[in-house]
Amino acid sequence: MSSDNGGGFVSTLLGFLTGAALGAGFALLYAPQSGEETRKQIRDAADKAADEVKDNYKKMEKSALKNYDNAKQSVDKGIEQMKAMVDDLKKSIKTEVKAEVKKETAKKAAK
Image 1: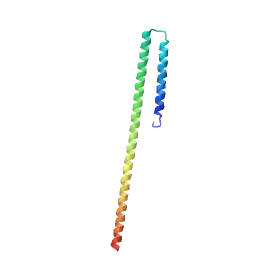
Image 2: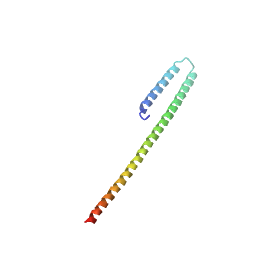
Image 3: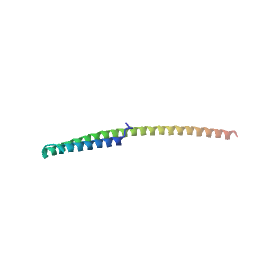
Image 4: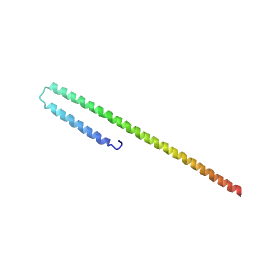
């Protein structure tokens, strides 16, 4: 899901909703009915579009939060791995330093 183009989806969705709203508006304005019926249909269409936008927003928000959580887990795992590598490196350096000090001490004692 991380390879999805969220910006393209949003643009497509907005374009679709804009086209649907304009089409519905023109159809209602040119329909042979009373102004009150037309206003009611426009209000209903606007309410339906608003509900669709809210639903799509909730879906996108849920997806974004899921992607955030996945990314955070990956970063946290990487940090833990790096800490383990640093700890291993510290131990290795301490071991080498101790061996070198022991070697130098033995050389001095031999003289």
